[in-house]
Length: 367
Image (cartoon, rainbow, N blue to C red; front, side, top):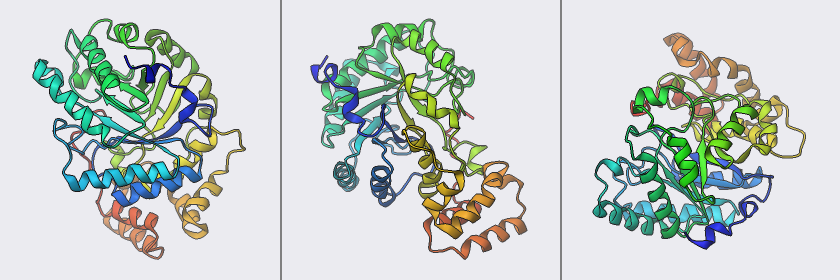
């Protein structure tokens, strides 16, 4: 194991909070534009977040065809993105999902894997995530293979923080239903076998948890022999039901008490980059020793006075039931209303959503 990991001080990634807090672009469906991603560096810096992780599920060079490097044009965009985060003093991360690497684990596969890790080094990420979420997991040797692959990543990567996502990343029964039965003692074996410098992602009692009890987090800490790094599936909206909704309301206020029980907090945002900033702003405040902003102030801070008030008025309906309860006339009324706020990008995203621009990706199976 590389010593750089073992000596890595947790605080070096967290300049604003007691634990690192940031976002992971880790959803299915339509991903953000590079322009939006670059703009996020400023937003995150301004509101005292610590990191951004690039891991969109529809980037085939990170998932479906993970063995292949990006085309040069994409790689240039990623280099530019990484530099933008560096300039804004936000740690930049990448999430690799070596889909079904264990279907035939032989040396050839591992050499491809090492080669891909070396290609990722070209981007000098500060954080590397090895993600085994949302793929079949009913293999007896799963923990051993994943430990081996994660340790290889820690050795090859030039990142100073490695975060691993297990195939069963929640106690939610939906995971076994969709991805097969979890191997016996899977979590205990991971906890025992994985180098202590490696962080584990965890989504709580549900794939999409609204809150996290200290007793649950402590029981998982015992099993994994480390505090978990929270992968928070709010405000994400990429599932069959959730793609009908816009999650604009703040994070649950109990998030302010989490820092004692977790190693870090990564929020998975919505397919709508600009609108995601409304709930994300509340998360940053929960982790700061500051008086949280009132909900109305958050909407106005991100969207401006008039559009902020309008979004606040519609937020409960957009949150649930959302699109599925709107007939064509009602949809048109909302579209007309938000067109008066164009060219504001938040209004444009609302209109795009109302017009069916964010269609559910059937690869998202956990809802």
